[in-house]
Image 1: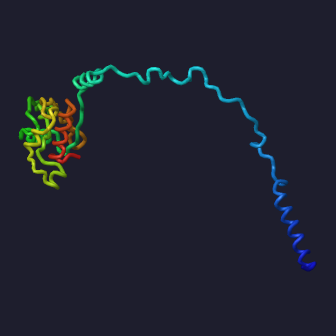
Image 2 (image 1 turned 45 degrees about the vertical axis):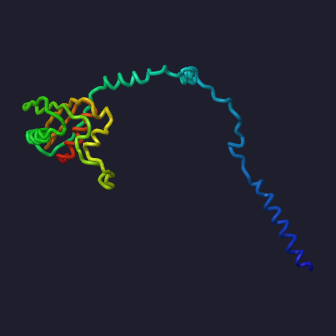
Image 3 (image 1 turned 135 degrees about the vertical axis):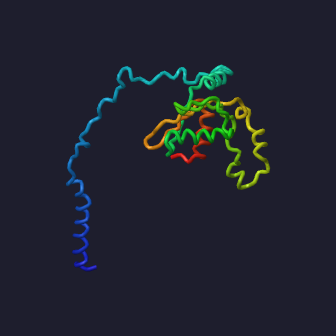
Amino acid sequence: MKKTSYALVVPALILSALLVSGCGAFRSKKDWDRAQQEAPLEIPPGLDTPSTSAALVIPEVGSGAAAANAAATNAAPVSDGFILADDVETAYKRIGEQLAQGDLGSVISHDDTNHTYQIAAKPGRPEARPGLFRRMFGGGKDANQDAKDAPASAQGASHTVVLTINPSGTGSEVRAQGDADGVRRVVDALKSRMGSK
C-alpha cells in the first residue's frame, strides 16, 4: 500500500474512535441519576389487610338448602311492565280480551275504575308453540307430552299476578306485580300478543 492509502485510513480510524468514545463526554447529568433511595412505604394504622380466618369455613350439611328454600318462599314480589300506544280504557279492554282466552290463567277479580286485574297465572309456558329448534328439526313429541315432561316446579300451583294499567304520556303503562315466574310469563305473553313499545 502506498502513503495515500495510509493517509486516508489512519485519520478515518482516529475520527471514528473519537466519535464512539466521545458520546459519553456530551452526556449531561439527569435528576434521576442523582436520585437516592427513599424509605419504604408504611401502611397507615387501620388499613391492614382484613382477617381471613373465616374465609374457608365449611357450612353444616343441609343448611344451604334450608336457607335457599326459606328465601324462595319469602321472596319479595316482582314488578315488570311495558308501554302500549292505546289510551288506558282501550288497553284495559284489550288486556281483558287476552285474559278471557284463559290460556294465561284465570281472572280472580278486576276493578274497572282503577283498571286492575288480579290473575291466577298458570304455571308452565303460556304458549304451546314449540321452540326454534323443535320447529326446525321436528322432534316427534307434541306440546301435551312436553307439559308432562316438565319439571315439578313448572307444574306447581298457580302464581298470583296483579296487572295495573295507568296513563303514560300519550299511551298507557301496563304494570304487573306478584310472583316472579308468574309476572314473567304474563308480561312476556301480553307483550308478544299486543305489540308493546
